[in-house]
Image (tube, rainbow over all chains, first blue to last red; front, side):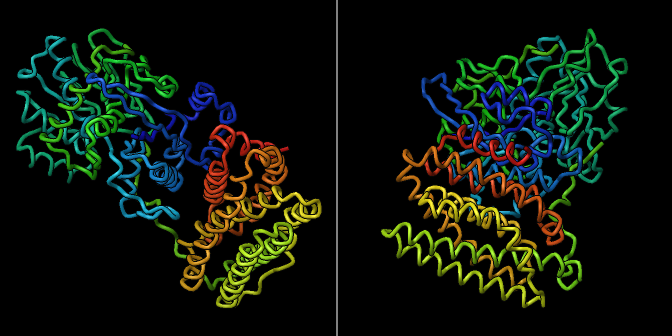
Length: 343
Length: 237
């Protein structure tokens, strides 16, 4: 049985999610409640592959909220992720994806140093960040949407915001090696990592965000921040394709301008209905069919019985692994989301 | 823009010899000693009520006495005199409820108070304490917490075997006693913080252990959520 560790995108949304899941006890609670709430397995998810194979998984809400990071409650965030992982392991789940901020918290707080959670010794082989599949899907979204919008990548400038992150660096690699993209703009906070990335790629222009965005025909946004970033659409090229692969997704709501196409990145559409309540609860536009690519990775690992932490540690994603998970993705009936459900 | 930085796990250095630390420790240490004493007495009483399990329960009681000795040594090691008056008052509500239930022969309520609530409380407190403890206390606490999981298991097994007949009484006893636990946590929050233990971490760990025990006994996730929040509502009332 596979597992998904997720959380509400905001405190406000916890109220709706709790009601949607039939847990009125957890609705209308404040941040303090969630700071001391334990992880809960709140939904069973059933998925059928295009091959006919059926699998079942558990969705565990870690109780984490992005507001915890905004209010400097890093310790609380860490506890949420570790406790949810211990819970997944105790439930005997074979492979569990760390969704939303979970993998970001795990990575940024260096949680691989913490193996012991109370009486549970975490077996990291049972967890995956899902980033390989997410990166693969984002790349496919760039390729397919560019085509749909008549943007020739060979004449396009692509800005990758969050380029040095796990997903960002994989996307840069793919665009560099598997497409004929004209120019790559690398945007991230840490200069040393940017330099290393450019050295690896052997190309790319390092620019601050405000300089990069107006030059870009395609913007791949893979930086995750507890609060959204304001982008002034009047400074962007027209047409401009924005793949919003960050978390939480809110660009489509903010940028509404003709000629600017915002697509929710890192989301797959399944060819068959997925039986769950959680996808509706967390606000998927088409909850029976749409799922985060990182969650889908744990489903793919379960379908293929690849019981391993397929995506783990920072910057370990290779094109070969992206192709491998991509092949499984196609085989089992997932495809990149293309029509923007927001805009 | 807030950034995620790897600072969460780093604690401020604790000065175990500072007056502030020792003052807070005098109450927390007393609570732990008193808790183990209460537990030992409760298991002795349960052995009278449950003759078939008497041998096992007497064994558990002996373990709690050993724990009490260990924690007494932790206080001595830091030259702290435990404030036992405070600790007895701290446990008085749970103590009273256990005595009333025992006098009425309500084994289910007695097990919920001792084997589930007190054990889960101890497990959470010890788990949260261990990373912040002085070297002497850490070794002792690590050994103790392993035992406490076994004690939680005893209550779970018996209540699981008798789940259908025990269910209503468990729900009632939960309502009456869980609120006391939240109040107890409030009472020690500031002292616990001096020892490096945050109230929300204590509550979370307690809830994890307690909810897991309730689920092992036979309650569904939804039922346990209702029970946990019933306790919260009673505490707020």
